[in-house]
Length: 284
Image: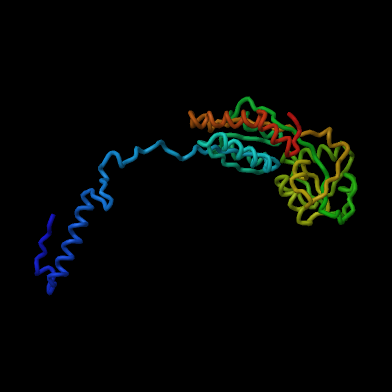
């Protein structure tokens, strides 16, 4: 292959430089035609690879109660390890707010609530069927490390001089707190009502309040940042946690619906139950 370079196009070009330019252009032209420095050819079937299937994993969106954060982080990682084609996207919050988002059309595949009334909202909207209770939980009194206010019992929550945090009554931990306080005959004087149990726990960890009621699993997850005080009557107020595949998964059909069903089965199965027990949850 050769190129003729008109002198008018490259005025004053010396013979040696002109030949060098011709060689460079010739080499570039051959490469464009499929040659390579290694002697192979891009058109050579033996050097090409057949495109594989789409490697992007299917995303499974899970809405879960805030109190499930640590346990579901572990469960999702274990589930993904067993299902490399799936990517679990977790969203935590107060069960009431999550249920409302689902009813309003959030594209969710699985819902795990901290109590049955919030799941019932989703079921009655026709967006979930046959929820299964997969765990239970009870409340515990917590104080900051060192217990600076010397709190000793549930009755101390009635002390107006103490800074108290509780969950809002519209969320499961708040409803359970109200039930426990009523059962024990204590009229609390909360300084703040939070939207989920993690927000309450944060107030305690930061020392912004002197005491609070949270789930025992959250007190356990906080470690040395808080001190837990058992409440004798807490065992009579038990939160039951239901889980269900949500209609959005079925609407997308196929792999999405199967993945949602598989995740529910995993949570309710032996591996899921072991992880939940490790986090301090009670059996269903």
